[in-house]
Length: 246
Ligand SMILES: NC(=O)c1ccc[n+]([C@@H]2O[C@H](COP(=O)([O-])OP(=O)(O)OC[C@H]3O[C@@H](n4cnc5c(N)ncnc54)[C@H](OP(=O)(O)O)[C@@H]3O)[C@@H](O)[C@H]2O)c1
Image 1: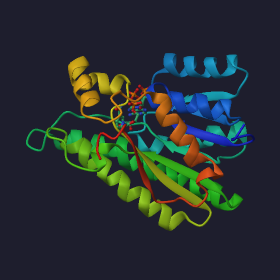
Image 2 (image 1 turned 180 degrees about the vertical axis):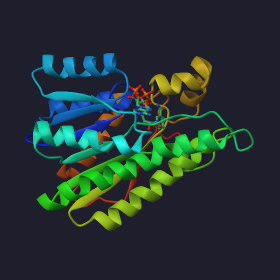
Image 3 (image 1 turned 45 degrees about the horizontal axis):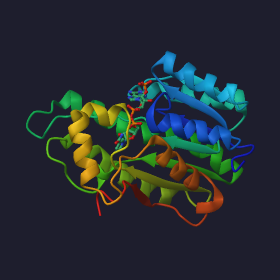
Image 4 (image 1 turned 30 degrees about the horizontal axis):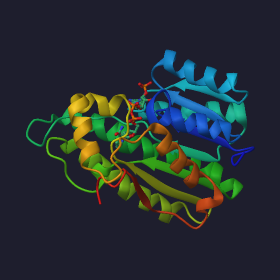
């Protein structure tokens, strides 16, 4: 029970790696606030956690609506009294390139993938600072390490997450640590939407570990960043990609 008595917010927890992380955090003793837009899937995560005897609740918030983000933190504090861990994980994929992306799509991408992470950090930081301790984990991508043809808004937004992670680490320390997980190909709905089984097989063939990642691979790294096992680590980005981007 490495997160006993801790309170965690996980955005994008209705599916994929956010869901796996919410479940693992709850199994480790945290009270978990699950956030996303899909009520059926949000309920399913909470039901799974409660059926296992652990604690979670959900709130539906579209993270592109920056003025609504306070509802996630408000509900967490109302139910659980505090926030110890924030996992900024909700993310949006775009398959547009530099010449075809519209400014509307660009703005939406930056709201969901970057601005909401900043805003959530702004909302939880005073709570964590007041208690003298807190952890923020952001999800970027291997797309934060290089350009991938045809993904300009996504690539640029994930590079920005790295800059934000480092800035949060600098400005919110010493009480708050902030680190970033940079997933490679993780088998979720998002990766399936890119190119189907052949694209996935290509990613597997091009990585030394010769398998696609599972959401639980990310959850275990999120747990490492959320606990004192990483007490002297801040401002870092860790690729979890089976070696895809060595
Ligand atoms: N899968 C990969 O290979 C991979 C690789 C690198 C990085 N990533 C990053 O990993 C993170 C999680 O993605 P995933 O692979 O686990 O995909 P996923 O299964 O599709 O999960 C995405 C999550 O984000 C939430 N979300 C998306 N847009 C939202 C919005 N506007 N407001 C609120 N919630 C929103 C979704 O919730 P609702 O559907 O309920 O709204 C869902 O819970 C993302 O940041 C993604 O960019 C994924």
